[in-house]
Image 1 (cartoon, one colour):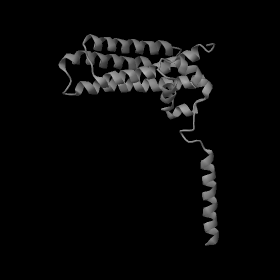
Image 2 (tube, helix red, strand yellow):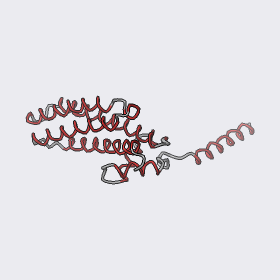
Image 3 (cartoon, one colour):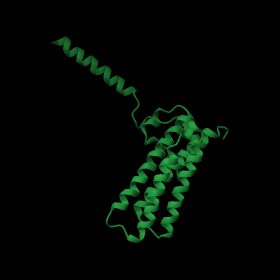
Image 4 (cartoon, one colour):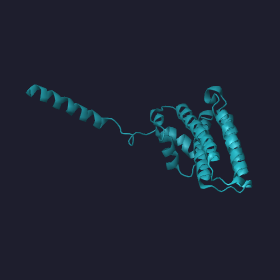
Length: 183
């Protein structure tokens, strides 16, 4: 019985020792030199918000190259574009939407569906990532113009478009860093 308790204590001690030497998610970071190429180029208001957005994806903790950062940022932008498209589709199903806003919201829903297609193309591997992102940005800009022209002022829409813009900006900066390594 004594040797069994000793074995349990021995394995518990080893487990505790090992856990102390594995980085927690809060300690894990994206390599600084990779972030320093991306975040200053993004249009996000603060460097910290850029890093926070990149860290939101667990894949970010495993990147080892600028290309991997860009692929990860593109993936995040794809997911956010899809989420924004779904957001507009769900918003249109609500009964409390002002009928005067409906046409602009329908246009935004359609534009973000198109953006999903653009941003889901081959990206870095196909050499079209910058073009794909700019096509998606054009659609988002058109959506904002439609909303402005229709005097649509819905906080959740503004917040969602800002969130999409942050992910777009990070992806665009990351792709730029890969396509223009001399900068």
